Image (cartoon, rainbow, N blue to C red; front, side, top):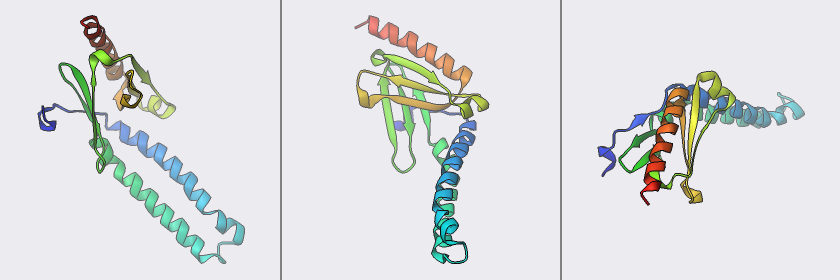
Length: 160
């Protein structure tokens, strides 16, 4: 089955807001750290300090501006024998997790996700590198998907 045959389900557009807030806070901290030389030496005496602060601010705005495209690139599909998750624009990653290999299905929520009514569904298998997290799901959808995946995993394991 090729990538084009899958019926991708997107994640909530509110996840853009969550990522923008988290990324914005991180870049404000980085911007504040990059402005330290201006506070120590003085704003008028350190011209290259303004260049550094401006460059950091531009990169931060670029990263935040790219978030909507990153969110649109994320999706998942429930196939007959596995769940497939994709993410990435430049470095794309598509992971298929067989239902029978699922050991744990977890729904997690941070403070910003809770405020937006979102959750992250994490799938854990025996292989350490195959853990998959699907962020930006509405809470009701994440709970429903968790219960569905647990039921599928139980039936697949019983058939082993």
